[in-house]
Image (cartoon, rainbow, N blue to C red; front, side):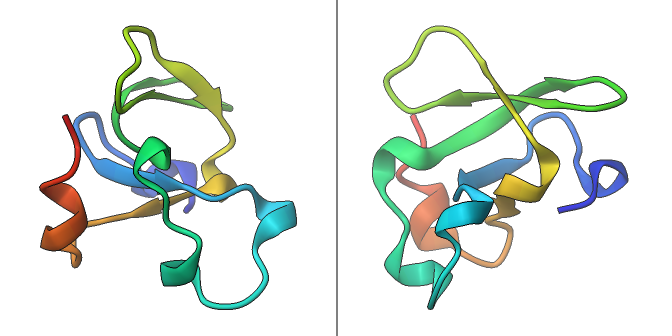
Length: 76
């Protein structure tokens, strides 16, 4: 995703760019599902399932879940 397309509270999935081979849907793991907590001029901060703190991510490594209500329901 582009940084300007990312908003606070967006539900996303993290897939590292170097692992992006094949279908994204086959790479989705529940521990890689999260919600955007904040962002700055370079990075996005995502709180993933079962974590208390946010993690710094590159915008290119996260993908929106707005068209995947089945995965959105798995975010805690």
